[in-house]
Structure formats: structure tokens, C-alpha cells
Length: 189
Image 1 (tube, one colour):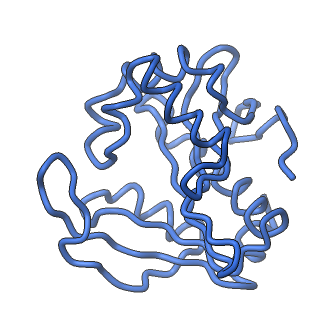
Image 2: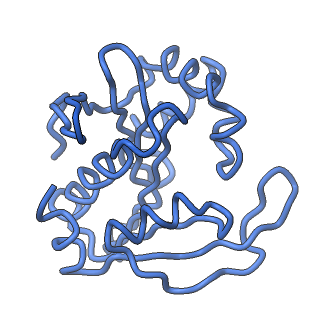
């Protein structure tokens, strides 16, 4: 289903994409802690994964495919983790799944998140037979919204006051790729 540890070509670089497991808890926690304020601006999980124990628990849920989680992958430049993506909220009977991604500030704008997401879109379509892939982001997360659009996702609408982040109620923009749109998104990866 997922080819472990392969080269990921981004403009001007050859990086490695591989599955993240609970065994990666220490480097993952350090990666998140090193850019916690920025990563936590739009996402709830960086707060709890900036410690080794928290990272181990979060990655372990992916290892065990708990709560609809399928896989978390990381993009490495040598020994440095730059970012990653995950597939979650998998509903096999409905053929739906959600993709999410993150990248540290030092790797922004280098194609890391896009390349990572394209690989997971291919996995969702071919390995999991997804007919619908969702991307959700807050309207204030402009970089996430732009990446979704560059990958071919279409904005379906806004769920008002549907997301709680550190006690604040936020809107969520919902984007999707459906059927052949998924194939079109990954054809040139």
C-alpha cells in the first residue's frame, strides 16, 4: 500500500518521505516543539505532541489505525524532519478520508507540503479506494487554503462555528476532491 522510505523530489532538493511511527516520537516532538507557536496557530495537536510522550501517543494512534487514522508520514532532509502529512477520518464504507499537512517555517514555500500531500492522495485513491478526499482549514489559514487550491481541491462551503481551538469557536472551510479529480491531482506527481 505505502512504499516505505523513498526519495521525494521537491524543487532543488532530494528529500526522504517515510511513515512516522511511535519510534519517531523523540525527533517528532523536537520538530513540533521547535516551531510550536506557529504550528499551533491553526492546529490543536501540536500542543500535545511537543513532548515525547504526547508524540508517541499521537503517532501510536496512526500506527494502530485508531479513530479512523490511516497513516502519518514525515519528510526528512537527512536527519531533520521538515514536515509531513496524514490521512485520517477514514470511512471505508463511504469511501471518504481527510488529508492534513504541516511544515516548519524553515521549509515553507519549498514544495514539501505539496509533495507530501500528493503522495498521500495517491495512496488514498489507489490503496484505500477513496472516492472523496476532504481538506479542512480555518479561513484565517491562508497558506493551507492556497495549497488546497493548488492541489486541485474545490471549496464546498464554510461550517460556521464548528471548530474549537483553545476555547475559541472558529469557522472551517471545507474543500474536496471527488472521484476522477483525485486522479487528476496526482497524475503529475
